[in-house]
Length: 253
Image 1 (cartoon, rainbow, N blue to C red):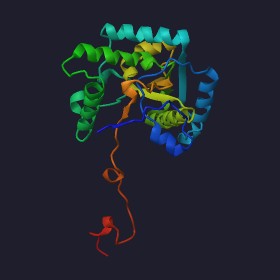
Image 2 (tube, rainbow, N blue to C red):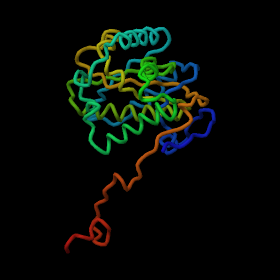
Image 3 (cartoon, rainbow, N blue to C red):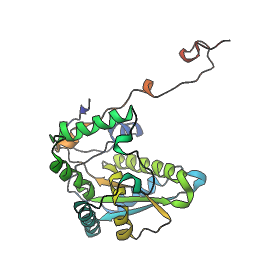
Image 4 (cartoon, rainbow, N blue to C red):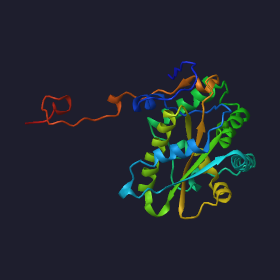
């Protein structure tokens, strides 16, 4: 089960370990601005990420102030008018259709949805109206003062998506080092025509995802708990030459 977070004010992470332990997807932000200079500093740090052959395929569109308001208004209008694209029409195969997730990922996805909507927000599965109203907050970057849209060169194939993931993780950890929080957002992919039109994104760029950036609201219910993680033994396989190691006991020598 998700565990409660201490109701403290947002603060900077002072080590990489602390940044990793305190990073979470924040869905409620304070109305405190973030300066352009600070955003540029974080992007410069994130640009130190590894990439295939130092190709650095990422491009970032930063939305602040009136520009962010114009984009979010267009996204909300598209959402409210039923222009959300299905998974099959996204720019790249981000995830399976809702009924095509295999185990154990189906159970994890279901548990997350019930925790978010049911446990935290108190919205039942049957209440489609309230669930839709909450989902619409995705298209305002959850009220964060800064919204980012990350793209990569389409010519570099799937490797560019891996590079984008490294860049995004570095950016999220750098944000924690500045006392800021983030939320990566695949939900924007369902409206990629709106993003292309409003941000003049060329066809040779693949839209990877969005990212909300700002100061978490520690008083909001959505910031009082965090999701859990699987223990190392559930996903790690150690290979060893030591014949006495547990993984080698059935090996003949």
